[in-house]
Length: 486
Image (cartoon, rainbow, N blue to C red; front, side):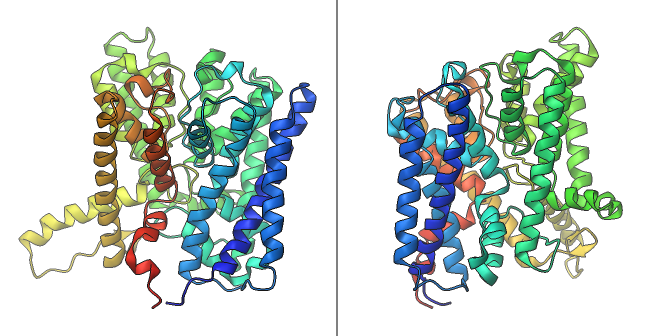
C-alpha cells in the first residue's frame, strides 16, 4: 500500500475547518435575533476559518486528487477529532463550561450525535449556544465527510474511499455510479426530511426555535434538547408519536428513504435488514408496554404503549430523548435498556450502535454453527438479502463484537477506578460507545455527565468517536500495520 500523503490530508482537513467556521457563523443569526453575545462565535469562526485558509494555501500545490485507503482513514479519523476540538471553542470562550475537557466532551458528543451532556440546566443557556449544540448533531448525523464529498469537487475519485471509510454499516450501497452524486442526493433527502419535521413539530405545539432544534436532533438521532425534561416537557401525546416516527426514520438506511422518494417500493419492501428492524422495535415495545402496564407504572395501556414505543425507539436508534425517567421503571427495564444501547438502527442510518445487519449476521452464523456440528461436511453459508455473505464479512462482524465488548469492559472498570459508582460507570460506557447519550443511574435521562472526572471525560470522548466511526476506522491508526510503507 502506498505511503501516507500528508499534504493531501492536511489540505482536506483544512477545508473541514473552513466548513466548521462557516457553520459557526450561522449561529450569529440566532444571536442577532435574540440580542445575545456574539464574541464566542466570532472568535471561534475566525480561528477555524483562518487556520483552514492558511493550510489550504500552504498545501494548494502539493495535494493529490486520488486518495489511498491510508489517506482516507487518516482524513476521516482526524476530521472528526479536529471538528470536535474546534467545535468546543464557543462553549469555552463564552464561559459556559468549567474547563476545556467539558467543552470537548459536549462538542464531540454533539458531532458524534451521542447526546451525552455536561450541562445541568440547558434552559439557562443562550439560544445561540442551544442552536450550535443542535447544529453539531445535524452536521454529524449524515456525516461531515459525506457533506464534503457532496460539495467539494477537489475530492475527485478519492471521495469513494472517504465515503466508505465514514459511512456506517457492513456495506455501503450507492444510488448513483458517481459517489459525489450519491452524497448530494443523500443530503437532499436529509434536508427535506428535516424541513418536514420542522413544520410538523411547529404545528403540534413547539415554537419555531424549538421545532428547528428538535428537528436537527431527531433526524440525526442525536437527542440534544432545548428543555431539561427533553420531549417530556411538552406533555403532548401527539408530539411524542411524531418524534417517534422521525426517530424511526432516522434509524432506517437513508438509501431506502431515497428509494421511497423515487417510488421504488419493492427495494424497500424486500430489504431484510428493515424487516428485522421493524420486528425488533415492535417486539420490544410490546414487551416493555406489557411490563409497565401490569406493574402499574401507567394507568392506561395507550399511555404504556406510547411511553414504551418512544423509549424503545430512542434507545435502539441511539437518539437519547426522554419522555419519562425510565430509571424508575425497575431493574428489568434498566437492564434491558442497557443491553439495547449497543443495538443501533440500520446500516447507512444516522444512528449509532452495532447495527441490525451485524446482529442478524452474527445470529445466523451462530445458528449455522449448530447445523455444522451435526453435518461437518456440509456447506452452510450465511445469507442476507438472498446473497451469500463472504467469510471475510462474517469474521469482521465477529471481531467487531469482540472489540465492542472489550472497550465496554475496560472503560467501565476504568471509570470505577476514578471513583464513579458501578452502575453509572457501566451506563456511561454503554451509552457513549453506542452513541445513545443517556445511560443509567447518575447518567440517566434526568442526569448528566458533569461529575465525571476530566480523564474519564476524555475516555468517553474516545468511545463516542469509536462508536460513531464503528471502531475500525479510528483504531486502525493505532496499529503498526497502518504506519508501514508497504
